[in-house]
Every structure is written in C-alpha cells, then in structure tokens.
Length: 517
Image (tube, rainbow, N blue to C red; front, side, top):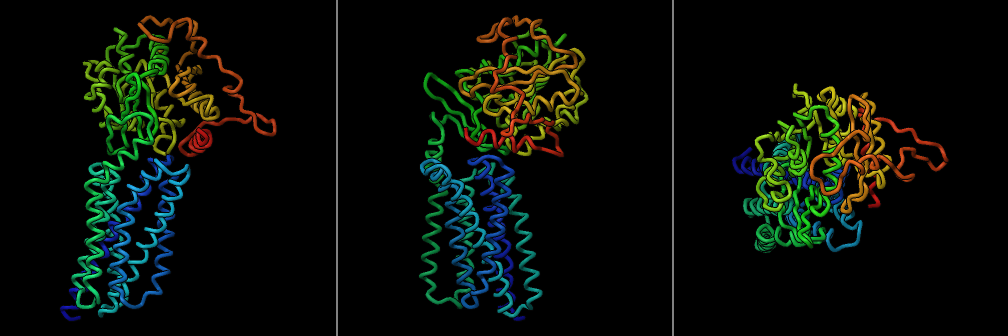
C-alpha cells in the first residue's frame, strides 16, 4: 500500500470511530428524551434502541445501491445526521408543547429510525471505500468495525458522564450534530481531489454547521420556553442532574411545586396533608422514636415534620440525588418550606441508593419513612418489592413503626393494594391509610410494624395543620371504588400477589392504571 492510500485508509478508520461515537450518543439521547417526556424509562430505552438498530439495518441494506461517489455519499449522510440529530431534542420539546397528544411519541420513534438508517448507511460505504483504495476487504472490514464498536463504547460513556449532566439534552444534541458536520467537512477537504463541485458541498456543510452552532448557543433558551408550556406555572429553577431533570415552579399565591422527570413531588399549597400523614402516625406509634430513617424525602419537608418531636435524637436521610438535597439546602423557597431541616445537627444526609443503603447498613431504626417516587420504571420498582420491604423489616427495631407512600387507591387501586400485599408478605403487620391531597388527588400509605397497629390508641401531640388524633382512625376507611377487592369483568375476584425482583409486575400495573391521567 502506498503512502497516499495508507493516509486515506487511516482517515476512514478515524472517521468511522468518531461517527460511531456520535451515533451511539444520539441513540441513548433518544432513549433519555422518551423517558423524560413519555415516561417509563425501560420501555422508552427498549423501543428507541430497537428502532435505532432496525433503522441501521434498513440503512445498511439501502447502502448496497451506492457503488459510486462513496465519499460524497458519506459526507451528505453526515450532513443529514448532524442536521436531523442536532435539532432532534429542540424540535421534540417544541412538538410536545404545541402539537396534539401522541405526536411527540410518533416524532421520536420516526426520528430514531431515520437517524438509525443514516448511521447504518454510512458504515458499509466506509468499508467499501477502504476496499476501493487498496486495503484488503477482510482487513478493512475488521478495522472499520473495530473503530465503529469502540466508538460506541466511548459514545455511551461520554453521554452518561459528560454530555447529559454538563450540557443537558438540547445542547448535547446540537454539539454532537456539530461533530458530525465537522467530520464530514474534514473528509471533504482531505478527499478534495476526488470531489467535483467541491465549493458547493463545502458551502452547504458550513451553512448546516452555522445553524447548529446557533442552536448550540441559543437553542436551550428557546427550548426552555417550549418546556414552560408543559407546566402550568412559571419555572423558577431547571436543572439536569446525573439522575433526573429537576424543575421548580411557582404559581398563584406562591404555590411552589417540585417536579422530578416531569412527575409532581409536592405542591406547597397542600404538601402538609401528605407529609403529616406520612410522618406523625409513625412517630407516635413507635415506642421510643429516637432514631429515624427517611428513604427519599430529599426536599427536607418530611425531616421538618420529624424534627417537631424533641425525643428524636438522630435522623438519617437517604436520597439518591445530591442535586435535590443541595437544592433543598440553598433555594430560598424550599428553605422556607423545610425550615432548613437538612442543616439540623440531628440530620445526616446520605446520597446513595436506598436499596444499597439497607443492604450495607448494620443499623436499626425506631422509625422508617419510605418517601420514594412512584414505581414507574425498573430502577424504582426494586424499591417496591418484597426484597426491599424485607430489608426495611430487618432494620426496624422491635416496637418501631414504618410508613410507606403507596400511590393512589383511587386512580391506581390495584397498584396500591399490591404494594400493601407486598409489605404484608414480609411478615409485618400493616394498616392502610389514605388522604385527599388536592394537587395529587386521593393518596395512599401503608403503615407497618412488628406488632399489631391500633390507630385508636395513637395520640398526635405536636402542632399540625391537618391531622388530628380524632381524625386519624377515619383515614383507614376506604370507599367501594378504593377497596382491596378487585373484581374482574367476569365477576371473579382478582388475587393480588406480592411484587418481587423476579416478577416485577407492579410496573405494568402502574402503567395501565395511570395511562388515562
């Protein structure tokens, strides 16, 4: 192989690696977009990966028809990937804000197949070009495939550890699109002797690059306005953490609301109804509530309610995302709501997974509060399994009590009672409670203890805005449409079974229950 052929083949190997990095980033980016906007992360990642790979297959098949002008074909494929992929996140938020319901899902899946097809189109062309310039086919194929697969690994790592946490989904798309176009322009220049109408192709590429750079500089601000349409109230704070998108809004009468990945966590107008039921029955049911564990509750409001009890000596709060606990400690509106509870000398914050914490900790607790997001994906489902509640039981002192938020017995009746059945399957005694929270609707809790629970004997003796001693027993009364007896269409009564790691059926129950709300 002469020096010129060696130089060109080297360019092809490097180009295949870099465009592979871009391709895998777009693939996981589309999964992240689907997870955030459409919900059910496992479902969206599965669909986007499947559709992207299908698109790659279609693109590879179509590439058979290209036998001439291989370099210019590769360059225009890259121009298209850069333009379409670069504007993908920006346009997705716009469609979600303004288009009819369901359009966003159709658009995401369509663009996933399209970018996948373009990505699949480019690799066979590069292999063919490497063979054309004199590299043995088996050798060129192996080297291009190695560059492609190695680039895929690098792309995945870059998205997880750099692009998403540092740039967010909109800027990341524009940035990666810029890389695609820059690679195309670089190849265009290095193979310029083979290309007719060089300046026309270069002008088009530079025009696309300029559009992407403008999007990189100003697209996020415009997308922010699109995203504002998804929320009723003005956005005060928006942050893309390592784990989730954090949105804080404020509406009329200073109604502050926290959203994690689009799901409402609380409204300051009525959060006290939720948190008082979550905390106070559990504290007063414990024989000696000195040591309290809160799983979740990174906003600090649950800890504020616990701190009303002088007998509490230590609160251990475990929340996965340090960005949430940092926001709770620094945002003036959240500090007003939580009274700076996370800064108390009694509170120790651990930013780690709740399951992992219970597996690794050797401590016992008098009170355990489980205030975690709903089980709408695999990572959250494990926190609603028999295995997880068994860990809760194993860390609960004799004479202690636990309370678990368990979604709505009205909107997700089967989900609520499945959670209750799962807790009871660990051998703990349980009591079922629910309360109307206007911003959420009717919301359910499962109270648990090693001993039988007598709600009539509990005395709420700290200041509250809603919950009283006399009211507490009434929260255990459920209407017919909220009852544990789930009747099927044929009149049979459905038997609910515990949710487990091996059989995580709660996710599907949850998705079916909430799809119309």
